[in-house]
Image (cartoon, rainbow, N blue to C red; front, side):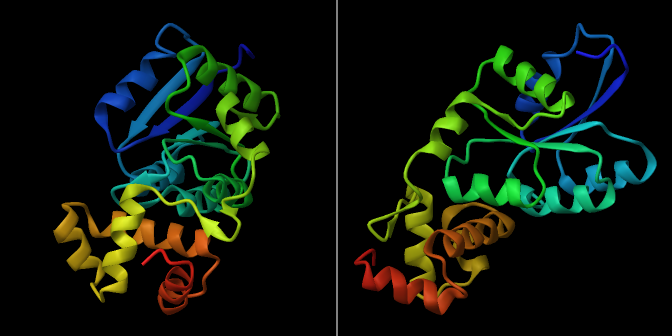
Length: 209
């Protein structure tokens, strides 16, 4: 890695994960780490200070990492943005990269792999953890026309079909409205639907409801 100082921002709404990631560079005097639990706080920070690399969670309490990736790139095109998430859907990974992301790491990657991916990105390379590379080489999300859904996505899809609002769904599942909205966007992408009516119609045609 270059001996030049590097400002590394980590954005995740789980404090334990933040601390765990931050500790990976605790003995490297050239890496200065800054942690944030909200994407909005990162954007405010970028207005005042240059950041070389951002490790960005995809599902945040105040919005989608997909959207924040695009906003960071608009504010600071030279900043490297790497997604770090439990989201394994091929469509989400592609969307993050299309939004300007420079890489994508799954949270189950080991410490050495995470550090290596950041080093790669600083060298100008696309940094993908090994499992992400394997996901991108597999079949698309739509297999025989049927999207693969997580258990939570199945719950939210059924609730949408029943006519529940995002606020209703959030209350039922004990999650935030923003998280529900993120799942709604992911479902639209997976079903390649333009709106919720088309989403429900397609899901019914595929016997998913």
